[in-house]
Image (spheres, rainbow, N blue to C red):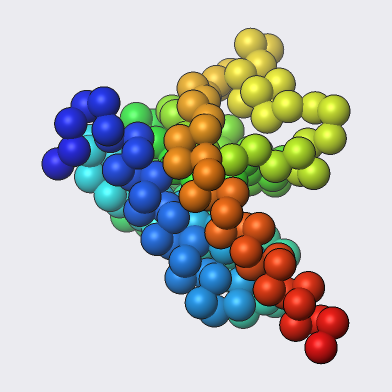
Length: 158
């Protein structure tokens, strides 16, 4: 098990491994894992193209898996690690599932526009707030997305 200082980095590497699985299947390479009590309880990666389902985001798949694993919808004391900042749909699912902590690699400025994820997940007017840590394994998380879209554009030109 990693030392306390490297815990977030260790689990983010697991999320990056999930992103690589998505990449190898031709999916936008976003990966997620959920951890409770220092144990991996769920994984997910994007499957929108494979499933032809707009809600098949890495975070949603991991949340569904964690709920099944724990036998309930409340993911209290769970941490979600995801390679890129969650979109508004996934942020809503994070809030609804009562995840305690979100750790993500790189920001996604196109997902939120002028809003920020913290405006939703840390809103004191809501009945649940989520701790947010960003920038863990930022460059690796950013690079896999950039590489994927670079190759996609290259293939479309040919």
